[in-house]
Length: 393
Image (cartoon, rainbow, N blue to C red; front, side, top):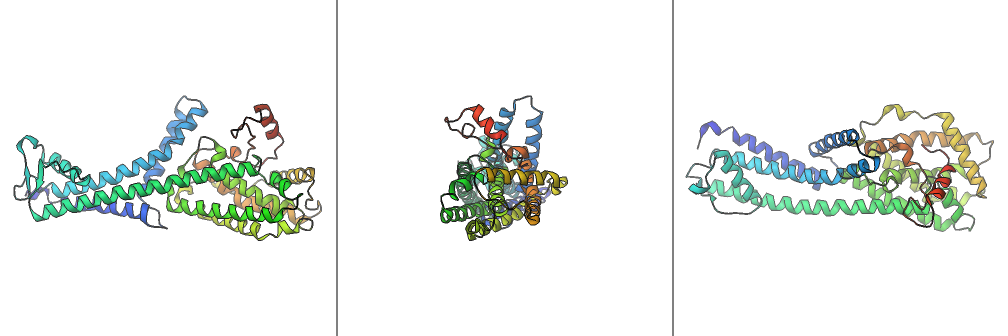
């Protein structure tokens, strides 16, 4: 045993503890976010966005590049865990690996002391066990068994982690697509109102709103459990979680603040709408409390009152055009409530959109059938539909 290498023991123990902590917080803990891999992910995402915007590529290619961010982060986290464990145990083996009391090393396999320590640590972690370097002493044999057990555990947790994250991604995209279909590609609830209210199907509408709330809360909790979801950036902006937030905001605004509460009382006071609004606000505050949106643009905390008033008047006009009874024009509270709700919720949606590299205006844009993958509407028709949409960004 080389006494000069004894400081390698605490260094190795430090690497192992870091890996254990990060795996525990990332995979097993249901509330805390790991301060290690999450900070690495944030730094990686910033660097990736900078590189993507500096490259001389088209916006479509840039969007495809950024869509690779979340998968690369997952790979990076797995590599980080494995590297930390292998390095940690290698430092524990380092003072002992060339001591014949603790190890036997075949002459043709021998290399530098650090090389042999790293090699034995790697084959132990991945349970390869070639036998050219073997532990002899009970202490080093115990370390090798512990490392092999941690390797198997880490691989198992990695598989569980991946199998938990990707269903959330597909569920998120499915919800976004479903909402876009339900709302006709618009970012407000005008299409939904026109579908359900004239036919007297307010009960069916309430059931839909309750289902949206359940899915929204499920995805919000998934963001807290798997923070890598903050960096899932679909190539199509209308399939993103930011789009989901904008659509649900539009539903609440339309039914809560656009419709006449007397003529459409069953809808305005529907418990499904109330719980959707509560779930939406809960989701926004949960997202805002995360470190992943902490660097949002504070200048966006204030909203332009004139623009919000124009948006509110446009919403009323479109609802009236659809044959629905809107709030009276002399109601002084309706416009103020609309502006207050928008002013309180828009900054969170903008921050989420900016975090994953979308222009906020694209989050609230109208997406016609052609842009949503249907062949029943031409690009010209989609553009015409977009031009009739009230400004919502």
